[in-house]
Every structure is written in structure tokens, then in C-alpha cells.
Image 1 (cartoon, rainbow, N blue to C red):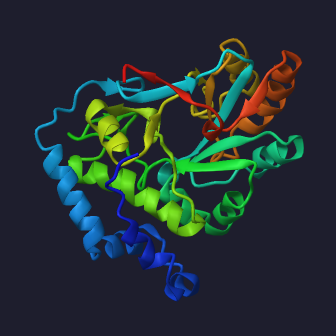
Image 2 (cartoon, rainbow, N blue to C red; image 1 turned 60 degrees about the vertical axis):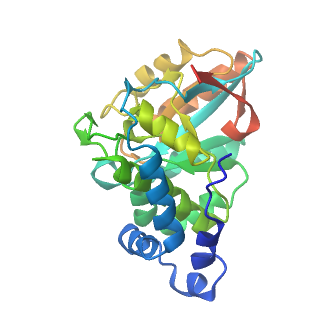
Image 3 (cartoon, rainbow, N blue to C red; image 1 turned 180 degrees about the horizontal axis):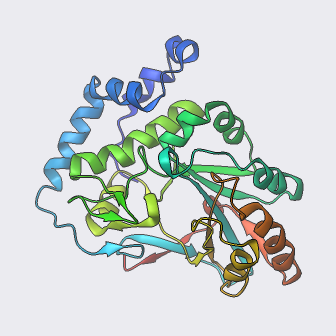
Length: 282
């Protein structure tokens, strides 16, 4: 873990009565508060200086310094679900989450600051359940880039300072609401450059990609296709990527096929925090 973590930042929101009374966590208010805090701005300045001459490196879903599966040979997999927010979907797939609860299936939920803004009470409830692990999907749900790369029509962060905010501001936001600092970061679209993967690790986070792509991010993909994508590609240690912010699509229906089939094959389910992870060329 990095020694750069600015512990004093927590005092702004967690250790004061102001947090309990006003809950100032909407993205616009939250970032203004951070920009007024010297611990945050000093840390940002040090990071920008350290990475000033670091090239972007390769761009993609599987770049150096990114983890993609659990380090195990046993039939254990991790179901991970993203909540994107903004125009990429701020809904809540209650059917999917309720199914995980009924079946007691642990899962890792990657949430953006924008999704939290749209679902504050739901987020607090999810964060309070030990069945779920809450992780970082970016402050504004932007692919993480030091030079403005974009993917799937989503504009990435413009530069290193923007990339810093995308990672660190959302981690702080999650911690200020839940009391737990995220361990893992998945960039929007899962695309990031090598510089941002290094940045995440310097800040104390593990950058995450995936091993099995469910395909549920494509609008209205049939449940049978989503299930087939997962079931034909699964293997021990796999990280499966799905979404829980688009209830109008077919992820919940697919999951109710996927889980029983995997259980019949002897698979168990784990959260990311439960196992060491396999890195790509670290």
C-alpha cells in the first residue's frame, strides 16, 4: 500500500457532525470540498509531479499493472457487477440484487460517483451488507487516461490531474459514506492506459479488469446469449464482468441461469477481497 494516503482527509467528512447532518457527497459538492482541502491538493500536486514525464503507454482492457483473475486452481470465481451512472445508466436492478441475496451469492459491486448520486439510499443499504463488497468505478465514469483517450464513445479523462480525481475522489467518496476504503479500481469500460494503472497502484489501489465478458453491456442482449457467454468461458479463478445498473436489460434473467449451472459444475463464488489476484506483467 502507498504511504501517500492522506489520512487527514477523512476528518472532513467522517469525524465531524457535519457529515452526519448534511451528507455532502454529490459529485459537484464533494469535489469542491476536496479542492479546498490542502491534504488532497498537496497529494494531487505530488502525484502530478511524479508522473509528469510518464508516457501513457499501452491503452486497453489488459495492460501492465492490471489484475484479471483470482489466484487459485479451485473452482472458485468472482462475480463482479458495475454500476455506471449518468447517461450510461443510473438504474438499479433490484431483481438481480434480490436474487443474489436469496441465494446468498457474494459479489463485488463497482460503483461510480454518478451512480451513487442517483441512488444514495440504495448505495448505503448495499454497502451495509456483508454479502457485497463495494469497489471503485470512477468519480464521473470516464475511461482512465492521461491523454484523453476515449472508448465506446465515452470520453476519457483529459490528463493526469483528471485521472487522479477520477480514481481518488471516488475512493474518498465511497469511504466517507461507508467508512471503508475501496481496495480495487475498475476504469469505466475497463479501458485504461498503463500510466493510469501505475497511478492507481501508487495511490494504494489494485486496478482490475476481467476474465469473462458477459456481454450484458450491449443493449438488450438476450439472456440466453449472456448466459452462454459466461458458461462457455468460465474457468477456475475467473472474474466475470456484468452490470446492475440496467434493470430494463436481461442481466438478472441470465444470472438465474448462470448461477445454478455453475453450482452444478461444482463452482463456488467469492468476493475479490477473499483471494489474492493474478496480475498482468506487474
